[in-house]
Image (cartoon, rainbow, N blue to C red):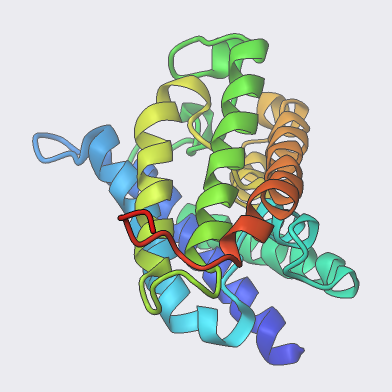
Length: 240
């Protein structure tokens, strides 16, 4: 269990440092900034690389919503849910703290610029409302878990789950960065929010509740609607 929790901590740290780090340090860097496209790929690449390196140890959740969704889908034991979430949050906070140390070495740096924190209303990159943000987080997390549950099913092609999951997270960011700065991960949201404080902490509840709701719904839906069909022989094309 120590190895599993350590893997979850390090993997979540890497996700926050890599994903949020790309947003804070490189997104708008003069002339060669990577922009929203680059940030989206950075988040996807952190999950992809962590999934292949640490996934064999812990299952590669790196996200409290994923842990809840896998539990709801019957893929993860209830007794391990809380320890996994604690390790993920610690990793998210540690990743944000490392990023803060790095970013604070630049002239004029201030967490008041946002520090990749998630928000809605006036703190949404596109000024999207609470309702828009809530729907986005629920739906994007729901689809993320559907991809995870499908890609890791025993009938899915072996060895490709990390690619599908990493690209799914990239696509999610391409869609939703303008709306909420994209959470779909309460641990990713918690680290930056603790450092920004103020509005980021007051809005943090939404980035816990909505991703977990979306993930739990996906787990229950996949388990009740798709899991049984996935156990049937595959359709080969031509009817008998």
